[in-house]
Length: 457
Ligand code: TYD
Ligand code: MG
Image (tube, rainbow, N blue to C red; front, top):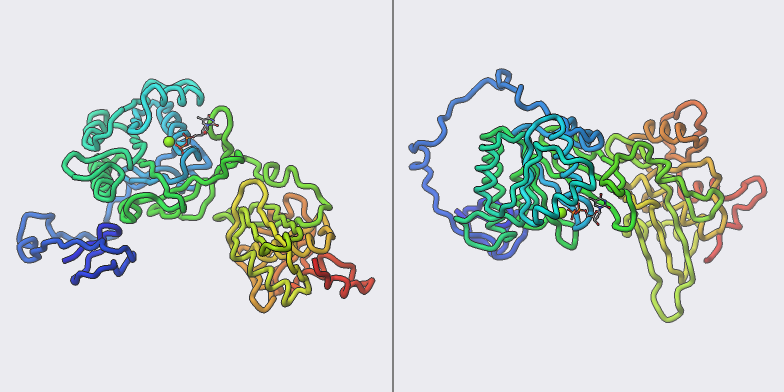
């Protein structure tokens, strides 16, 4: 049998490239002796009735950080392993230290394994967050076996390993952080977690393109994969689960990084819409969905003539650059908004990222508004996917988007034609095409201004 050292898939025949993950030269031969193994002394092949399986141990234990518990669907499950990824400096160590403090304050023993930072560094960081409870224990170690022993000896209620790339298994050759080491250490810690019924959280570094460093098999080994995202220059930090065996994925936890660590954001709108200047061209408000939660996000656009000798620039921040290019083409073909030789900038305000297609209409309107120099009415939100033919397509969770927009004080919404009715006090303007949306939002049809829109920036 051949096993991929990157994703762990097994294949019968050797190939230069892994059929599952596409890595080159990753397949290694492994000996198998199925019959001998079956006859051996492994686990007994005893089945149980699924309905009789004990589930009492699977209840999540709250971390005490409500925003994080929401993402986790209640908290950390005993015996589970969670991988927390994120760029350097985004706040992974800070977040986990806060979790450790919070659990330790209930009187439980918790362990932080610091394989990267010195004990003094960790203590200094911990003290920024508040008094350090005596049941928060520190293990300065890089040997993964020491982590396993420590978990058993301290009967810890939670173990955090910072980071999985910095610990190593003495029986495995290779440098810490390399594929064989990361895989062996994670496999070992998963076994320890299951045997001791302790939740483990492993910090995982990410590569430049945002993927978790190390073998892809890491994500398969653990029960939950969470990421902390955020723009270094903004205080906002977003935590979400991309894989979760014990609950929903896609839930968003919002924090701001401040002087005393991460604070839960209770009112995201004052953060996201607080500095909005109504009446400014190039701005549209989108009721975006993050998990089950609607968030109002300002989408902005700006254009400027490109230098004559250079190609037009397209810059997207917090919005999908491919959607931006697509919407510019659709606006030109079907919306009567022609941009010509111009640089275009688009962004989602506040350090948030919106990638859902529902953002199309708001982004298209922000672009059209920037080009025409006309502002959208202040009380309008817009959502809908834009198709290549310029048609506005329906998107999920329309009622939730509309209720949240109404709650914040918006009174009108530009929505796809099939959108169900919104809450009281929210007037729906159903639009079938981008052109219609642009006309409705930016011109006064009664004055026959429709043609005036055919501007070239
Ligand atoms: P850190 O948790 O060390 O990030 P990671 O483990 O993901 O690399 O956080 C680093 C940043 O957070 C650093 O720039 C300092 C900042 N920070 C604060 O602003 N306030 C605080 O209370 C703490 C502890 C850190
Ligand atoms: Mg760190």
